[in-house]
Image (cartoon, rainbow, N blue to C red; front, side, top):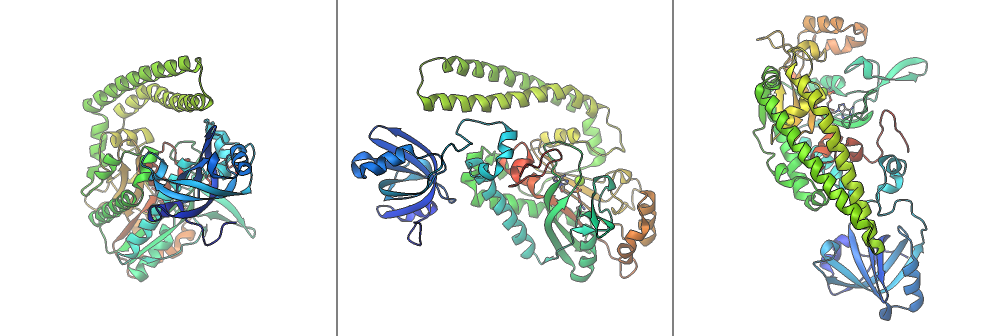
Length: 503
Ligand code: 4AD
Ligand code: MG
């Protein structure tokens, strides 16, 4: 049985030439008569374990040969360096002990559809992709806490049951609170503003809930958001804080998770460009860009590129389908099948983008000053940049009641969104807060919100009101950008989607 004498796969580099015991699960195996290659995973990495028939008891050799994927076991052997092997080290096996043999593990190396994988998320978490994403998520969350803790912020835990909307009322989840209607929090911001008046610099970090009736790749109904709030800060100060914060998160991921980012196929060169200063555009400049000839051409060129990609993908798929007809070993068949699923999913995505291109081109060309930016508009601006882009000064009517009106231009709010580059879109939303009592009362009324619910919030403008502001960063969207995952449901262990909550 595993005990303190086991070694973790991540520590093999310190044990070359020595005999160690690994405790883990059988990730994959292949056998060629007198030799078996078992890939073991133990939560810290993967290791190829080589079992030679002559070196272990015959009974054990046979048992291992029949052992199913995801069986648990311990394996003992000598560590040797092997550059071609996964992780760079392998084990020359002398003994092994099966802890629990698994049969017919439902997730095979062949590909499966997304619904199947979501239903089996409790098992799919063991896959390499989910493991890599989980490790990166851990780093991102650690970096978030570290950044604020090291920069004079105090953590405040804001409540999850709330009496009033913090964002749009349409996305509130109602709860029956002992007969009184309450809601699951959409943001900790309002309570955090109260805390900022005590501590100066504060942050909250927890799950937030939005009854988003949109099935997009960017929306979850339960997601994690970190929100800093600072007393005595202006818009420039907020942008600088957000810039330093995001730069730190990316640097930490690059430093701690390069191999996981590589495994996921993330664009590391692009991530390395994430350094201050980020681009800064006003909303009005964005409208000018969206409606320009330059953007029309950009989207037309993009359509040409997509059509070329489509053709190349179709050719490659036809080639592989032809190869499938030949005489192949099982592992070769599996490899081609997995490649085909991957290519078909890329092709489906390219087809969707080809289909959407004219719609998005039209939406951009006809964009009218005053509307909030839509998902496709954000995507276009984000695709045109190789570093994150701040978009500031949105029309105040399109934005939340608490945002401060720009005293130099009453039509706009002192707010910003941060768009991650290469098409990923918004990862942060933030603003300076309206600090004038009367103006805030007017805005609450103008949005038809029940003023009584905001009594305590208005008190903050009565007793020592100061300029203040903050922002919220969505954890899953940030991870999707870092890893290149297309859908944020892959960036949380147990996703909650509008139409899908499987486990
Ligand atoms: O822009 P949002 O709605 O801003 C707020 O909630 C402010 N109260 C924050 C603040 O100023 N303290 O949300 C902030 C971020 C978004 O930029 C996005 O990254 C993420 O939260 N987010 C979502 N992520 C996943 N699924 C959803 N449905 C999300 N809605 C927002
Ligand atoms: Mg937003």
